[in-house]
Length: 317
Image (tube, rainbow, N blue to C red; front, top):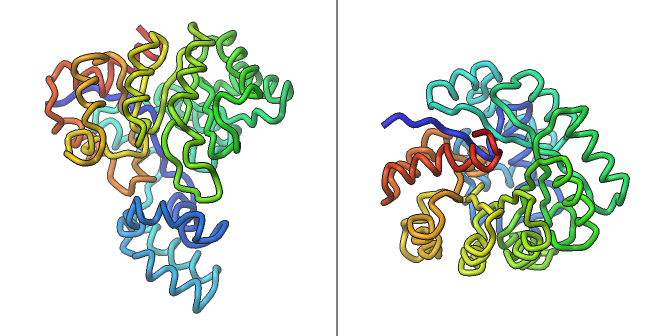
């Protein structure tokens, strides 16, 4: 069955997509802080371009970072596509538009791409709450001047929980601008940060303080699924997605998403949205869509997940 699709975290084939991902695992701030990501994703992105993380580690150890970058770039070139080619692929898959922050979370770069493809992309604004009122002004500029469509708050990037009161002026401005807010809510795998920095209870608090603010709880809330489900049931303005997490896990016993699958079918079939983050997962977008199609849910609920819930969330109908 061919369905219309809105992807609420659409990775784009921008420059150095795979190099940026592989660098996170093999370079960056040290393997000890990223080891959990390696175990969780199992090098799927490297396998996509015909490499393994072990091979890349050996290259770094024996030949250095420049050779690592050369090898990754050479392999990635076989799999990369232009933006126009990617848009053609979206047409083939039935993807009407996607919400994106680009892979380097650069607001100006995101705005450039949104301007180039205004009917196909909506952009996320990443703002550091520690900037205070300067951050509030930056958010207004991103929306009114750059044309970005939502605020994205990621506790693991800003180094504070989403309910830190430094974030509240941004939520108030987002509500004033009538834009939604996406908030990371899941266990993080960076060992230098608290495990529960993104606990769903923080999003629950925000949804209660800002009842007119449309909020997307991203990443699915694992391992605190009961808290995530309870929060979405409690608040009319709170939606949820599984960005980065394979939707197939909803139906796999032991993965911990059983309560969420039940709630999607019985409690909030109108509040769970598709969000692929396909590059981070190291899976083709079409495969992730297929995993939604294979869930033990009705066609109506699948239509909601893939399209209508996102449309409602952005108030486009």
